[in-house]
Length: 126
Image (cartoon, rainbow, N blue to C red):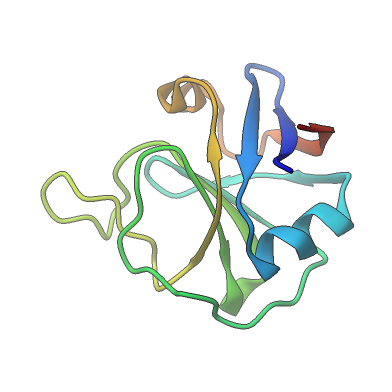
């Protein structure tokens, strides 16, 4: 059964689907989460009350991926290149656990400023 979350900022509201990983389950169990998002290139990230080890870590992610960064206990939304990217790749600061995917146009998050309030909540399960 797919777990759907709603990500809300003052400028963007978008659904995302979580995958079937331990990381996704831990994030789901911690919802709702509200935080001030930091931007790093075309990534928004913020600390969350989840502690998880590396699980199939990836050093390059896809557009629209949601990921967990273990060193910072951080929720990450990837909507384009980061300062660590080479060419067109999307590269986190270091390896992350990908646990979900945006269900809309990731580029909409480019309008969200650094420090914006971000709310992640359950939107249902299919």
